[in-house]
Image 1 (tube, rainbow, N blue to C red):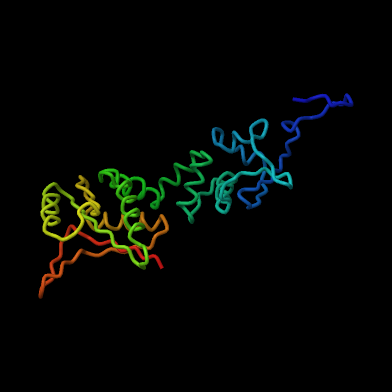
Image 2 (image 1 turned 180 degrees about the vertical axis):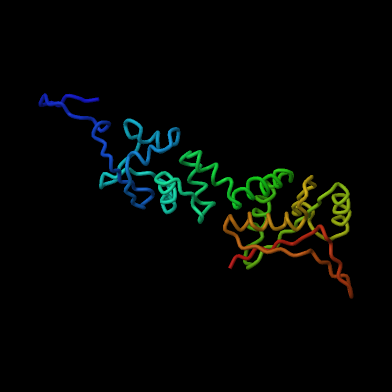
Length: 240
C-alpha cells in the first residue's frame, strides 16, 4: 500500500518498509531479531502483531514496544529461532508462552514435570476442595485485620477430609473457647492427597502472594496435659 505526499511523490507505507531486522523493547529489555522469526508461529500473538501493519507502539528510539516483563522473552525467541524448549524458568516462560499464544511451546512446556505436576496434579486436586481460593483470601483478610501493633497474626484453620471429620471438627469447635466465625474451614474433598498435602498447598499459595507464613497443629493446654487436634491448625503470619 502507498500514499501520495503533498509534493506529489509516492511514499511507501510502513507495511512495505518494515525492515527484516526488528528491534523490540519488551518492558525495557531490548532484543534484536528478524521479522521471519517473529512470524514463525502463525496464529500466535506475535504473528498477528507483525503480520501486515504492525499493531504496536514504538519507543523514542523507534523500537517496537510491548508493555510486558521482558527478562524471559529471550526463551520465547530461542524457541522461535531453533525450537529449543527452555530447561529453566519453566513457570515464568510458560506464562509468557500463554500470553503470546505460542501453542506449540505451550504444549511442550505442559509436558515438563514442573507444569505437568502443577496442572494435572496439584490444580486438579485443589479444584476438588470446595471454595479453596476464596478461603485463602479469607485467611489473608483475617490476618491483616489482626496485625495492628503486632508482629504476628494467627489464623485458625479447620481441615476436614471427610464428612465424619467435619462432624468431629464441629464438635471440637463447640468445646473450644474461640470465635467460630474466624475459623476458616477447608473440605471435605474426594481425592487421594491428604491433610498435610493441603496444608502445604495453602502455605505455598499464601507465600506466592508475598506473605511469610508457617503452620502447626492447634494445641490446647489442659493443665498437665496437652490436647492436639489433627484437623485444627494454626497459621502464623509474620509481618516483620
